[in-house]
Length: 137
Image (cartoon, rainbow, N blue to C red; front, side, top):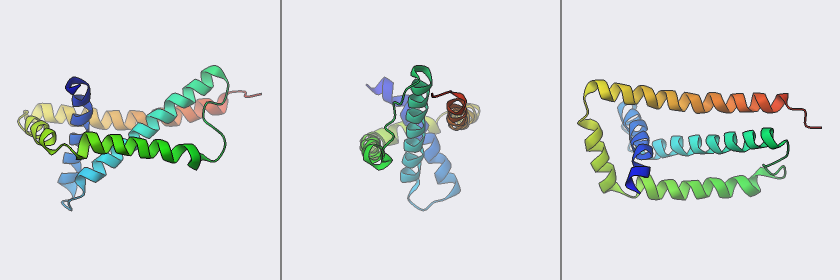
């Protein structure tokens, strides 16, 4: 289980360290969790969008998005809270591991984190572009 969670947790901690470096208001953990949750929602939208493109049907319900979007967001928030915010001992362990890395490795991890965030955002835009190209009739 730890091997599955560790890359996600290190991604979270890299975003956490970014927010710690730009502001020291005590909400860096919550900001990082919000960024991770937003990226998770974007990834779900990308997956559902490509399923709709491939199958040619509506996977996402077209009714009120509050009826299906809010429960998904709340479910992800609970999972993220249990993974990231509740386990301070795991956070301390991985944070110490990150801080002991060399400056070069930290820079590589930071660049990979930025690339991951940008690629998810660009892939979401590309997915909406491809959905606009589909003949739905």
